[in-house]
Image 1 (cartoon, rainbow, N blue to C red):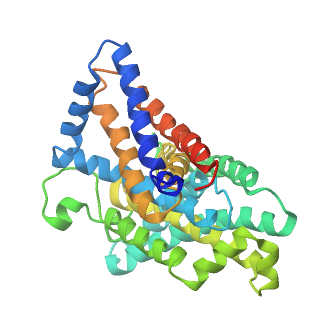
Image 2: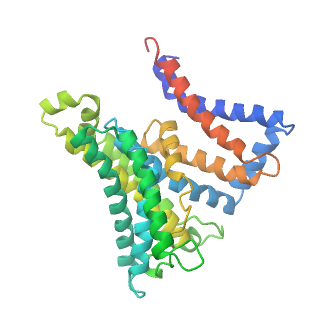
Image 3: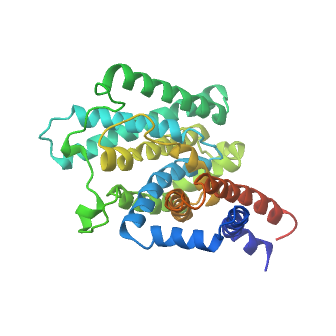
Length: 342
């Protein structure tokens, strides 16, 4: 098999090696790895509730992964999906609680989602503007903006918007929330999975078409591969940087649809649980391809919830090791197969 074909199998090799490393650690604790993984499969994909939990977790990771993948087309590493998701979720909650109680969902839901997307996009554009105007490395600026977002949302929540004696905002009006998949499809999963999962899948396909099947996607790639040549060809590289980061931030903010509109119906402390950071791992495992990010998010969502289902057998933290091993595998195998002719 050629090196080119082997490189296409890097994500599979990475996942298998990570599961193998996890099996070795599980065996070292005196528990059967096969028994652990079988229970995880039965508890997740073997029940509607379990699959709904996996889908719910994967949906937020899918939004976060896409938020990383789009800027990466211009060779920008968006490490700020966590802050963009935070700002989007906070904006969505504030918009949802400010709307009239009688608002029609046909107006309330789009308004709330637009508020979330605008907040995430603006937060990402701050890093893009620093990159374009002053040459500030986007990794540094997006990391710092994550901390600023945590500080702003934490301060405003605690001192202005929290319901007394709680760590969450007032509940959003009904017309600004998304229905669960149970109500939408007549299921009996009783899980937090909601309409935003279907939105995320459609968005993944749309981003694949934008990045790989449109002229704009081509100019993004060109601006990332060779900015100087792109400028001579008439491509405004600065606008491509700003545009890619704005789209990425808007997608991260759209993750509020899953967490706020479809699940909690308010903003609370610790709402994102680091999903924005995990989105980086999801995008890396998928090679930043929107379609593969869908599968990558499902793998990470399965490990996240599946680890909870077997925590009486092995510590849940073990599956954080598996996730980290998958990313190390991606880096290692990609480096190995990149060497030599292929």
